[in-house]
Length: 271
Image (tube, rainbow, N blue to C red; front, side, top):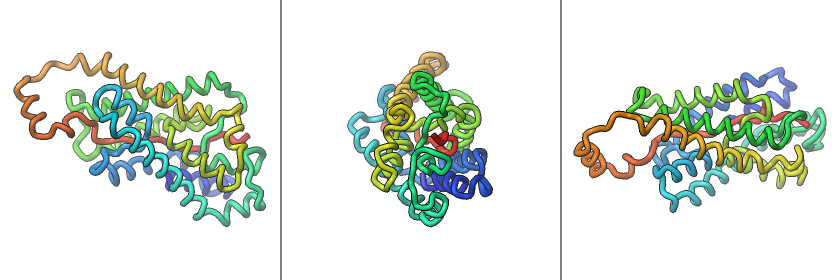
């Protein structure tokens, strides 16, 4: 989150002279890669509540762990936004003349969270997030499916980052493709307490709940689609071999060891 929002802050406060949407999307994708490498061996690289929830639904993650993971994901996003604000405090103050706003040509709330384009309705925005997160989960499940076309061991985070980048380049125009509840809500709460006020929740026809709810719906939908359309059609393996794998590493056998989440608010369209 620090790298992602930092890239957006650099672009916005420099009036796009030191970064544009492409740079911001690329930085966010690389940030996902780094985050998975940092946390993958300890937590499985869970950076996204929609991802964690989806794994619970398909039986690959413990429901008991879910509340704790979501809490830490939210705290991480909040802290990442706070770190960006601290780093770019002088730049933000100079760019805004000390007036932190959600609206207008000098708004800076979109550095931290996503906001819809002026033309976007809540209904279309909800669909946008469902489709984007479904694509994310389908891609991740395929990348981590050893029975499919496996990615070379250790390169899964890089390919997940490429997936996130491709989603941004193809689905980022409407609302900046948050596709991650914690990526959007944690920084939004930070901006609320840091001086932007309640407008961060009222803007975009009360947009804030869409990137919280819709990615969860899309993540579960994408996971179920992959299960039904791909995974159950793999050739069956030797049952005795599977039982041996379970006995050796039952927890690792059930869980997918990598993930994300998402991303950028550069294209969080300014209101």
